[in-house]
Image 1 (cartoon, rainbow, N blue to C red):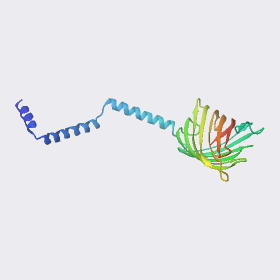
Image 2: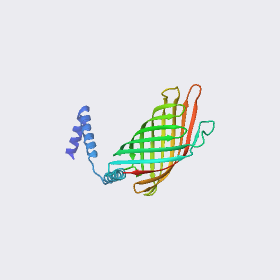
Image 3: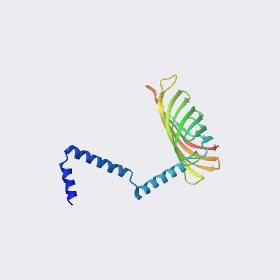
Image 4: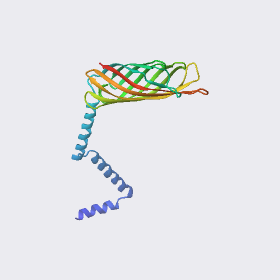
Length: 245
């Protein structure tokens, strides 16, 4: 008891800066002990995090790093409007696409050929944020460049960005949707400026490497001009197939 009293008296008699130094050392040692401390709760929490990471990797990784797909679709008698009424009597739309991907990155080439409207050629660079392949539930973000020729107006070379989403309801049946946002760009020979957006959604059936699909699309284009602005709208249903390799 007397020894303990002597230690207390010695600690109290120490200068303030010495006491502060001792306190700092004690606090640092406690922090280090807490950092390296092991508990059952910590182990269970770490195990859960690892399980979630393993699950995400299982859902979003594949042994086949490379994938290619080629597709074609068509819409007969789709609606084309310019703000004053439907243009033309028969309007056909043909779409062709070819894509390559390695791991989560890919290149997507598209061709749009439309009667009584024009055509466009697109090149997209995309990154897969969710999903292991084009035949799994997934989310892709992309940036693209397109050259669009509108009959009787001009040719526009513009960038755009967007996203595609695929949701498998069953192993062979799913839903998909896409959004494209076109950046404003002036024509090559006129003062028209083109901007707009395109949305699409539909369903598909996979039979092995072959996908049969139907998709409704709605494309709105603004042709800005000081004296003769125009608003174009294309909408209809595409039917097609895609082959995955």
